[in-house]
Length: 65
Image (cartoon, rainbow, N blue to C red; front, side, top):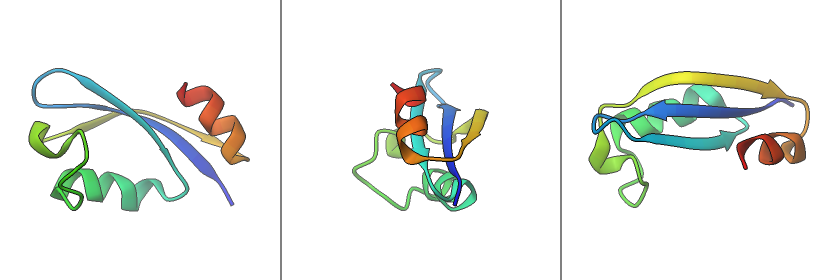
């Protein structure tokens, strides 16, 4: 299993960093506003500007921080 760190640029020019084990699904959730409590919900549209794959969640979390 792979883990990803990603950075999104929001419509208000702020950036959001996150990690996931399914990059396509997570970006789709941000794009559609599937999670109303997420930071990006009111800052859509978002654009993926960076992603990096890791072999463990710990590596991804360390990179995200």
